[in-house]
Amino acid sequence: MTSLFTQEIHLSKRHDKIVSQRLILLQKMEDKLGGQNKEKASQMQAAETAFKRNLSLLKDIEAAEKSLQTRIQPLPRPEVVSLETLYWASVEEYIPKWEQFLLGRAPYPIGVENQNEAENTIQKEAQ
Image 1 (cartoon, one colour):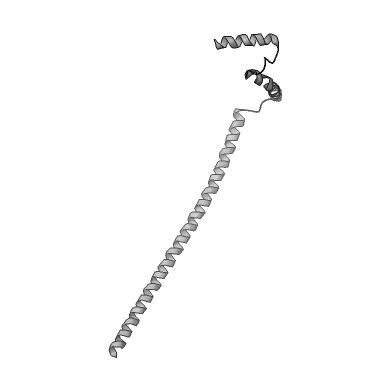
Image 2 (spheres, helix red, strand yellow; image 1 turned 180 degrees about the vertical axis):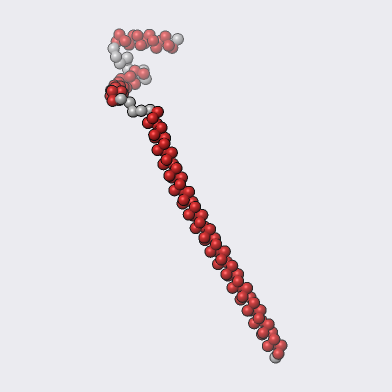
């Protein structure tokens, strides 16, 4: 009987030792997890701060680029803009006529006299 009682005491002490080791390990795991969470939060904060800084730098660079472009190429005078608009309107008006001629589907679009000159020019260039 004493042997069983001794064994019971021994097992009880061993159980207490295992439970205390388990508690120590659980505490260490909680501490490590808390440290990892703090580190992750710190990294997230650093990443967010870096993102905001980079966005601010990008806006500054774009503003500087825009400023430099306006200094290098000032806006054209209204007369130039007007002439440019008229030129492109004229080009758009004549594109369909010239397109057919250039594709070889229609005669020279301006007139018969000029057509002979154009054909001569094209023949000279082909030779």
